[in-house]
Length: 289
Image (cartoon, rainbow, N blue to C red; front, top):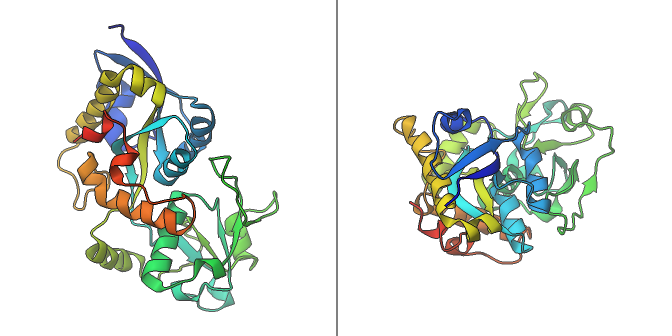
């Protein structure tokens, strides 16, 4: 069959560099990379217009896209995973604040539907007993999935999230890091908290995986397998994975993180029901190891 040219967006992660540079290639297809900085700015055109053939995508964006029937297919190829506890800040000038103290507070987040936000809210609700409905959420961007009705308070257009925290207009922010001396992590010892959480849950919080268009998946399943194989080969070139592996490949390796983020997304009313892991893939990608 003809060699195909595919428009692709992937972040500049170490484990995809050989694919992005062309050092690793396929006999079936060529990847024409389009740069988006930050990578998350590509998610909206991918969800709304299927603007690329292959695209990195935050898992909550994908879950919401699936819920609204967007023609995308997930590959179990992690691009970004990280422990989330250090991505929450507060301003100690207004008094000490911990994760259990957020009810009744104004908490800023870039968009309510970000994956980092969903992970941290899941941790707050399930590990600290926080009632998320009692937090006054302030957002700065629209969701990637246009059908989602965002009921949060929108910050004025000229406002910046960290500046609002510094100015006392927000009590805390999620999904941000900063080395500003006036700001402190909401979780007092983020690395230690993350280690305890991992010990308890046994889950690496995955942020980004890879999606392809349904059209490509249906017309050229061989190419979809080839894309996955190429990405996996690049990861394996990097040598043994860290422990825990923050970018697992394969359906089984991603099962526990996917189950947990589905659970959190459902609890937070981002998706209408809990999806089984198998439902997140198609006939081709479901068997990828």
